[in-house]
Amino acid sequence: MSAALRLVDVTVSYDRHPAVHHVSAEIPAEEMTALVGPNGAGKSTLLKALLGLAPHVEGRIECAARRIAYLPQQAEIDRSFPISVFDTVLLGRWSRFGGYRAAAKSDLDDTRRAIEAVGLAGFERRTIDTLSVGQFQRVLFARLLLQDADLVLLDEPFAAIDSKTVADLMDVIRRWRAERRTIVAVLHDLDQVRRDFPHALLLARALVDSGPTARVLSPENLLKARAMAEAWDGQAAACDVPLRATA
Image (cartoon, rainbow, N blue to C red; front, side, top):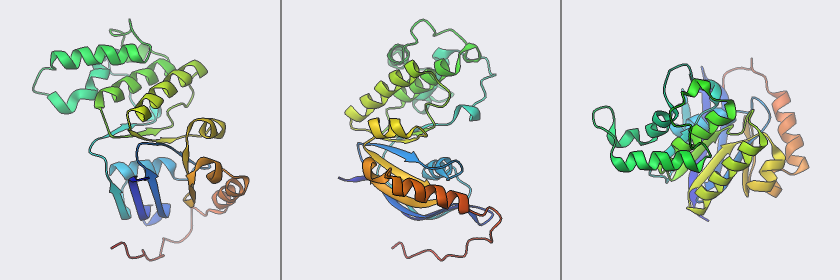
């Protein structure tokens, strides 16, 4: 199985204090991979490093994708701006028309179809500040549909949403997999990971294991991850472990 992402001795630091420490792993292409670990394990930080959004990254990240789509945590999104559901979803095509050209009819038609695909037909003119958490997450998934990305990165896509919305959005993710896209999702529900995600990467600042989910989420690995997280000293000296050769 080919790799969509290859991490080689990746360390992500804040003022030389690592949030993610010397991680080497491969993410398989055209598959669904869950990024799991205890709270504070560095999962969201690693996702941002893959996007080039982390402050200081050492090591090497190899990415085979031509286009990447990213779903941030809802807490990072300002919903006070008075923008409609339709226009929010249409922003998924921003790279095509930018701020100087009008959206094409095909973009508008695709926007309507994406809204229907996530179960929000009739919500097009609602402003996003009037939506529930679950409804807004459907909007964000519809926007991802328009991006037509090879690699989809999801940061806690099911946090604080109802079970019906989770089931509907999982259908969207399975559709992406059927279209041979690569999905990486930060998740906390290990039962869901075991049920729906064939591959997993278990992180506790450092890598615990990556590979088939049944192996990665073994009781031994989960105990190891918990122990590593509890032993982590946020006031420790700056990282002085040398990077291994990456050439």
